[in-house]
Image (cartoon, rainbow, N blue to C red; front, side, top):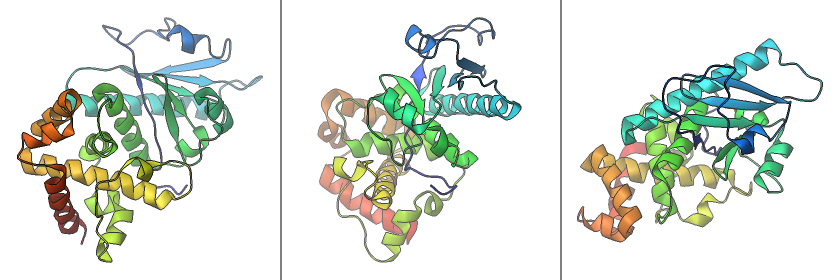
Length: 278
């Protein structure tokens, strides 16, 4: 994976609902399923509101760069929490788990492989794929963490994939300082060639099986611009309320409250893609 902001990376964050100030280093707050994951071989770093747990290789003491990397990840998790709070409100305490390798990450997630993923959510915990997460530049790491923290805070149940992935990217890119054409580079190539998407992306477009990474990137970008259009046209607060309404009553009824259907949203979104990228 090249060093770039990439939506070919997925990460999620568990919220530790622990009141008060950040815990002291000798007072771990890891849940038992994490505390007992690597007995005697867990290295913990803490940010102001976050916890990062790393699997220490056997016979290895953390070097200075290991400690610095964990501290940096904790700071980035803190930043992600603040960015999510700016849109959704509340305070969160993220927990990120860093195994030794991609193979161990896959085993923890209960899958054979994690091709093309920098991290994955599994049963409420962050499983970072260390080799790939390390290839992201600083902005990319922040975007990935914020995206998946949004999933945890906002939830995804009962929603079409374009809405929950697009909403997570809306929050992730909101404060990233990236031009639209940079964040949606793959989609921009298609749009400038006159190939606008014909429909909002469905589950097949988000298949992270390594078969078509460019299509996967475009799927995230298409979903992001659908939610960005809604925020630009109706306001960020309305986008948040639509998301909640879609969870309660379905996306069709939620869109109807704005005078939209999936078909009319699709038509306006295609115009928005063209206006933003061509």
